[in-house]
Amino acid sequence: MAFTGARRCVNIVKGFQYEDGHYVIISPEEIETAYPRTTQTIEIQMFVDASEVPFVYLERPYYVAPINKGHKVYTLLRETLVKTGKIGIAKVVIATKQHLAALVPSGPVLVLNLMRWGDEVKALEGLDLPPEGAKAPKIAPAEMKMAEQLVQDMTGEWKPEDFKDEFKHAVMKLVDKKVKAGKTETVIQPEEEAPDHGGAEVIDLTELLQRSLKGGAKKSASAGAAAAKKATKTAARPATKKSKPAAKAAAKKTSAGERKAA
Image (cartoon, rainbow, N blue to C red; front, side, top):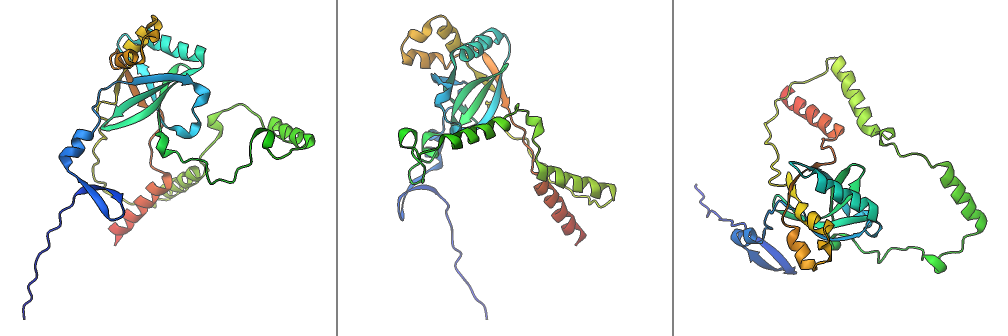
């Protein structure tokens, strides 16, 4: 007895659900035309007081350094931001994704901190928060004095090296112990392609700075935005280290070793 069946063809498409059960289908060609153009520039939109941007909007920092002969303009921008207490709000395209970003002076370096878009940060509605100011709950002077004393007693100098990832260190200590005991496995890992950062490694910003420092900032906002797209080159690189969690790496090695042993 033989059985025959019809082969089902499945076509996978991309779409956007605009209401329950209803979608708009978007072709690969249409998606490609919507990609932002990689301009290799930091397009500064405006300058704001540094205190105006809540830290919840900050996401991922990159160091920005001058290359070629851009040191003077770089220095002028950095020192001007420090003196005025301002930061730059900019747009930048990395690979094919457009990001909002803050250009922030931090000691000798300018940091381009990628930001979350406004609609990505949840509003405070629905949270049971005590009111501020005059409507705040009554706090006795003795309670405030005790709280201030506690903060004062615990105040110290910020030293990032004083804070360690205790879980990571515990796992690595265990790894070292097993290595010394000879409890290791040989695992063949597939080769990984180096990540493609596209044109994000070279970022422009100088023409805007030159015009601003010569009084061009008094011109229209449209002229400033256009100038922001031109410039001397600067190099940007991530300010944070990328590494796999020790526990994950250890678990990966263990499971791979078990598969080989089996």
